[in-house]
Image 1: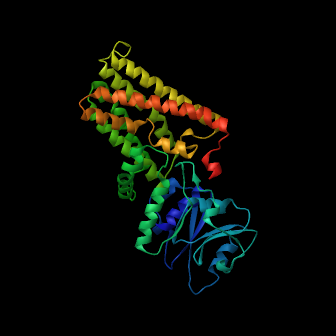
Image 2: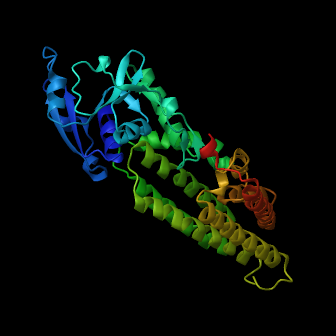
Image 3: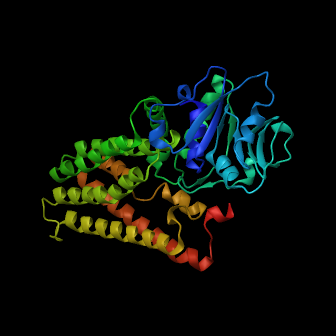
Length: 382
């Protein structure tokens, strides 16, 4: 999308309901916007033609918008936290980049003839909160002027990295990063939506249940890795193109526990020949240990969030690091690859069962230890 459209989508995200775009002579707002703009934003946009010989163009615009206006340079890529800070501020403030003002809140009836000479309080991005709750990591808010192709490529890398989760498993963190970025770059200009990617991912995730029950482990694991990659892509596509939705987030999270539990049941069923309650069989005993640890860990981490209002997975740097290696879907798939390579599918069940027991033990210790220490979440100390 154009830089102007990106800014308009971000302004809508922080609650701005009306925007004026200062266009070159003969320009039109529609030429800056994608066809799906109205679907994902709730902002009224009009245009004013910029006349380089008329110095009072900006003054005229400001005189028509009341006592508060947010003025933003259209040649920058901004972190949405910059706009959110200004939109919620109660006094004139501005962010500078080099010698230029990139974003200014005009308040208290102040009309600016020269934004660079504004008495507004100058804020730096380092003064803003660096912790991103959605991606569970610290990222200093960015302001990136765009004048060259290289700066565009830099902005692409910075914005994609910013929306990529920090506290995640090692496959997502280190293996999927570049493939996901390539896929997002390729499909961003298309009409493919994040929710459509989520639905395809769900079809693969629930579709893999059948081959797990049938003992077709290569097919099941292949489908698992394909859906895992798409599960990484959908969120990144939504956040980089500013097309997030509550329905997409709900679809993603509701399905996660359901299909994974059924994968484990299917694996245990096929390895025990359908005798999951016959605990004289090693497969049935291992499967029972796996399910017990899996369910107990979900309850424990959910209870921690309910009590303390924060995820245990990134509470401190230790928990953040542990999140990379604890038992989850992708580590399970890696364990199955190892087991299939060894020609012993049972090994996959044993690996993930032991992994979940170790994960549960770690989380149980942290569940007790953190409150006793009075440890605050890293976002409160960072």
